Length: 80
Length: 141
Image (cartoon, rainbow over all chains, first blue to last red; front, side, top):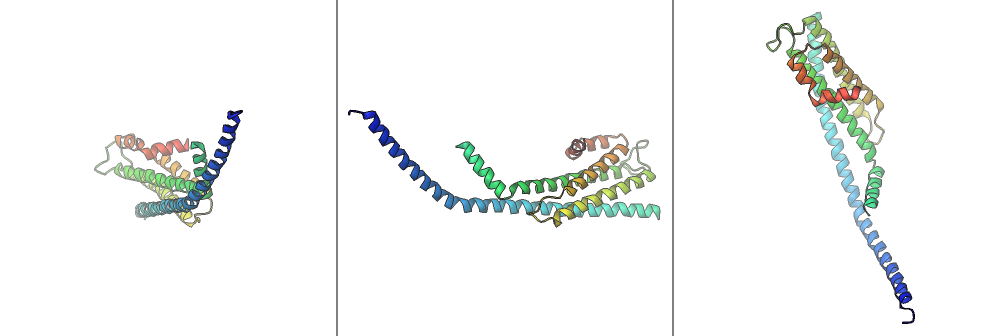
């Protein structure tokens, strides 16, 4: 009781260190479990994006080819 | 805590190469926009050629002009195909080639040239109000 503030403070610091250590351990566990999940999620997102872009451009190229050929046929017909 | 989460997420995305993926996706969307604008112009131009039931007398495109414009269309569609080829040949991990953007800009310039040659009709006004033509005009400026 001579210096209750100091006792409480020391106890508080001890508690905080323990709490931080516990937090660190929890964090490690979360990263250990979560990182591969996030990596998988990003991989799925990226492959979906790449695949949908490829499919879209496949249609774009086919349409461009069809229209180019039609226009060329028109030119050839007019110019003999 | 919020800023830390955002930082960690950003770091994860960049380290996973999503920044490069974003540029690649933008290039794909740019090619698609250029092609759609050119295709829309293709349809409108074809409908305005003199003799077509959709063409208005006095505001129609002559056969000679049609052939002249067809040559521009052929070049534009060729550029689109070249851009797609280049996109497909570029490995996913490699940086997106600047040539794709240059080709898309060439297509955009052709679309604007064709647009300038179209007679002032409501079809042309409708074409100019599409998102693709607006995007092209914004991009070329």
